[in-house]
Image (cartoon, rainbow, N blue to C red):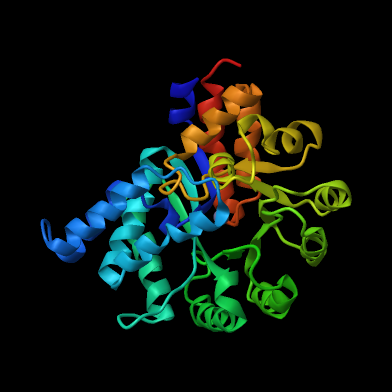
Length: 343
Ligand SMILES: [Zn+2]
């Protein structure tokens, strides 16, 4: 089964750019930035070595470890390198469709506009280097950065979307789920929808925020990130509104929001409630995983067979934010792969 899953054309709908950088990639960025053997490079290599032993069971601890990639990516060349490395990693794992999400940043060296333009540029370049993988971009609002930052981000997106409507396809809200209020973002999300963006929002990542979860589902979204603590009426509402849930098994376990693979909500959502779900990595670098491994964890834990895997692929295509034409091409590739296997 491992060989089958590795070779399977896969669809990744929930991957954060910075979190997808592996420790090896971070080392490569440190070497490029500071020069091999320099004291600064050695300093970062030590920090990166600590990440290799990461075993946090706490959501706020997880957010701290993103700091290192932010510290390393301080110019547009490094950002481009990082983006290309991440796309290459997914391509090597036979991912055929990838939606990357990232919070646009600005610093002394670049503006948010340049940040997004550089990623779009990298995506374009990757399309000629790795034509087998289609890549799209979802800019994110980071709840911890607040509403003014989100307003600024939306302004930048509105400047770019006319030029790159086939690359910027959606919007994400992510970051510390206990920071800020969803309702403050509603006017911006309405504007984003008018710009033609689809919504993939992190939701119900922590327990005890049922009211906000309900508010989010009622507001509407195309896909939900995690949905870990969706229950009772919110579960019914989720189903009624045909929202696809992006399940990130290892991420949830390493962040401590789910105890172990057996307890993961993927099981009841997919099998019991027949809610559309997709298996995603979230931050494959931080959590030392990849899409094949995540699918295999689900296979081993919940006994998914090839028929289930085929259904999951079809759900991934259906709920992706790409054109019908691209969906048809990917469907053909996936179907051809499954037609050649015995069920
Ligand atoms: Zn996420």
